[in-house]
Amino acid sequence: MTSPALLRALCVFCGSQFGDNPDFRKAAAALGTAMAAHKTALIFGGGKVGLMGTCADAVLSGGGHVVGVIPEFLRDKELAHKNAQEMVVVADMHTRKRIMFERADAFCILPGGIGTLDEFFEIITWRQLRRHNKPIVVLNTGGYWDHLKGLLDTIIARGFAHEGHSHLVDVVNRPEDVIPLIEAELAAPKPAVVFKV
Image (spheres, rainbow, N blue to C red):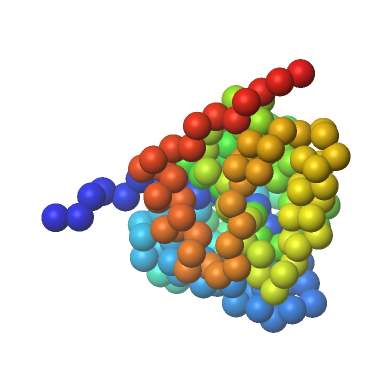
């Protein structure tokens, strides 16, 4: 008898555009398909466009559950995904991120822009400060996040973070590796990093 899945809800941060590489869209769809097969709900920013919409569509096509969290001003621009089983409309971006955090067991960062970086840095900062110890996985499709990986290494090397901070986030190159990695970490959580000031 197999053990019950630990990853019930995954928050996916990603772009509202498709980017310049068709593999970004394929990876978003593959992750959504894997989530539906795993019976992992998608928690996302609620949009119907770009990689956000692609991932949500794939979850829905596989019979999975989709929870969008969108601010009123974006819903009013008719950007909300109409087929999400649940759409939480909030007053502002801060509330959006808080609810997405609360509803998720883990986080996956796909290619995206400034908003995706904002979400990533906030969730990794909270983990550094021991406000949570939920898994964070960067899906580095086509090497998109190579510079981000280099930046994080530089921050550690130049003395603005401790060596243990490299364990705050994991990086994978294939969408099929995301869920197994998160399941493994949920089964055996990493120790919290040393927090020094």
